[in-house]
Length: 186
Image 1 (tube, helix red, strand yellow):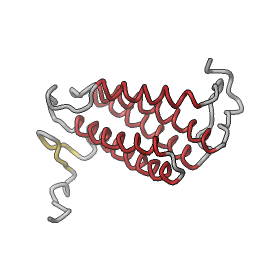
Image 2 (tube, one colour):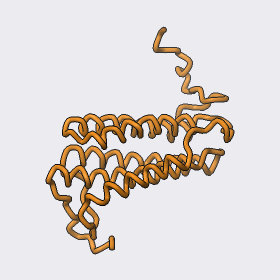
Image 3 (tube, one colour):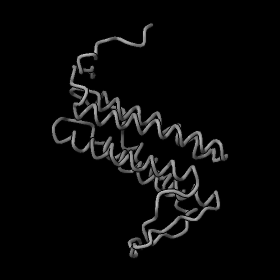
């Protein structure tokens, strides 16, 4: 099998049920989800390196779920029985957030992204996830999508934030508060 098809050489690509330009908002949204998935893979490797196996297992599951998100956005006209992302996936993220949050010290101010290598990687995931969410919201204004994808991405960015803080706790690296931040969390 050849890895190139030449069908996109004129700036178009296939979606499920049609073809669109490669800069179509749909491609921007699920392309950014694909980019996020690559960063999640990097975070997974770092989690394995430091022996944070629970996080590594979750990140692997998230990688599969991000493929589900991209698949759901790739439908020209999604039908309810075709989509993969569902409310249970959001609920699972919320459970993980709650468990990690139990390990974290209270937070009052904004923190700077960083700390340990793993935490810094998870903060990159968080910001790329937010961009994917924004692009998905933009897409939803022009075409029908599975709105569970937007909910999933919203909760996933929360997950990355809390997991980054937990990675720092486990590494013995304190979060760095933004110096000019007032108390914004209570």
